[in-house]
Amino acid sequence: MNIKDERMMHFYELYEQLASATANVNQPPDVPLIESLLGEISAMFRLSKGITHFYRSPIDEQNGKGETMVSYDLKKKDKPVHTVRFLTRLMSITTMTVYMAEDEPPLTEDELSRVDLTMRTTLAYISRNRLQDIAEELAFFDDVGYRNIRSFYNYLSWKGQPESFNGMSAVNYNLRHFSLINQELGRSAGDTVIRNHYRHIEKMIGTKGTLSRLGGDSFILICEQSLLPELLDYLTEAVVPYNEDGNTVTISSCAGVFIIPEGYQFNHTGDIMEKIIPACRLAQDGKQGNIVFYNEKMVSAKEKTMRVQQQFPKALKNHEFQVFYQPKVNTMTGELCGAEALCRWFRKGKLVPPMEFIPVLEQTTDICKLDFYMLEMVCQHIRKWLDEGRKVVRVSVNLSRKHMMDSRLLETIIDIISRYQVPHEYIEIELTETTTDVEFKDLQRIVGGLQEESIYTAVDDFGMGYSSLNLIRVIPWNVLKVDRSFLPLDGEQENSVRNIMFRYVVAMAKEMGLECIVEGVETPAQLEVLRKNHCELAQGFLFDKPLPLDEFEKRLDMQVYPIEMKTAS
Ligand code: C2E
Ligand code: MG
Ligand code: MG
Image (tube, rainbow, N blue to C red):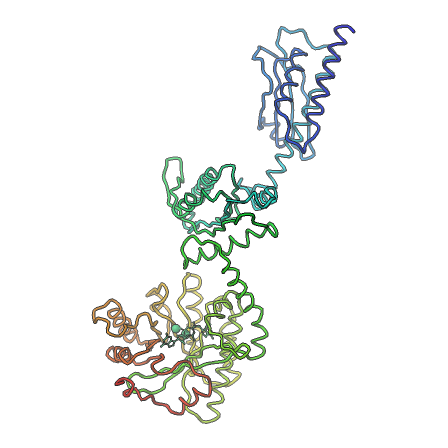
């Protein structure tokens, strides 16, 4: 065998190794082996350098906008001798050019064909890898470059075995008041804040976990439990730069955390989400703090919720809901002057208190159906009292805030009242304070509309929420229902904050021409406080608890409460 043949044999040996090392895209490539083979082949053909370019599109190629990879460089004064170009079906382009030192003899035709073969094989392999990268980027990253939910699920199924989650935790967190930051600092600063916040957490987690964006300002992550104290600290309060000058803004988040138990078996990849998302929602509510740890009770709460939602339509149809009436009494005369209609659910002979089902029904628009049912029952009863020639008092019905979005609310209310030909002045609608501007506008519209129809309106639980004086300045209510939290307790000092506020709220209501009623009057001393402050109306256990229809009818007939006796007792 002559030298030429030996060289050829050696080339084919190297080439075969290269071909097999680059053949399988499903296995991680043996990069050092591939590089050493390419180095040896380059040396064999006196090549001085190999440069690969990647372009996302032909336009990027034209504009020279791509990535460059130098794979072999003897740093000689050289010139290009051969280029191979690959266009993939996704229109991305990979080119490879090899160089030779200027003083080297040029490649023979034979040599060129072997160099070409090597380059094509290598390029096919690089293009495939590159395509995989692009596909991965499209599948696992959102358009702003954050890992997405698919990437999170992929991580869960890739980790696979239950033991691999031992010592790990899952977290869903939401940045608080993020729209405010966008408003105050501008969108681009907002984007920078989110990115810096994300990068910081990504760095904290390192390779032992994953972080993805669910959308907007909501994120999910898996990390080591040992990292939780530091992570939750950062989530509670993070100082984040929003521009290059180092200006910062403080970001707080709310988070739902699931400590993954040892040997935890997933039923499905959504399993973890079903734990951290409800926990995060509770954290958003804020009642249990900014950070809420998932526990089994949440599941039973969720089951209870689902049960109520499931049973509601049938219960409504079967008249399981009943109106109870709680009397409203004139504090000076003891006269019965009104009542509040409160809902009671009799389920399988047992009474379910409103707090167990009203908040659940408020999660959907079911509450609206119940409120309309209550209004209808009240109208039916008033009609009956009128027909029986009984004394009739004004009855207030509670309407949930869920009605605010209903553009036909007024018509529906009037429709129901008209059906029973109830004079409008016998109906009062109780609405609670609102929290948003949009709701405020709706509230204004609804109260105004009811007023035009001579239907009374009351602001319920005044002072409970974040009361705004605007609420009573701008909206034309008839009645202010002072929440019982304002009512001084027995034996409370005259100059206590509660006493002072109570005095002024009652005085303000009266001065503004609003009817003022205080809820939750339980003791004679409290009744005395009302009288002293010239508050004429009271509702509370001192007089009566909410009563079933027949009991309340007895009160209608009785008409006057013996309050002097009660005060004395
Ligand atoms: P609310 O409208 O503020 O009703 C007053 C609540 O205070 C009633 O509770 C009543 O039983 C209670 N209460 C009355 N006097 C006293 C007292 O002296 N001491 C104490 N501690 N409590 C007193 P209830 O009936 O359990 O209703 C709770 C809430 O459920 C109501 O608060 C209202 O927000 C809601 N609700 C009840 N029925 C309906 C309804 O038909 N529709 C809607 N949307 N909400 C309703
Ligand atoms: Mg009420
Ligand atoms: Mg109330």
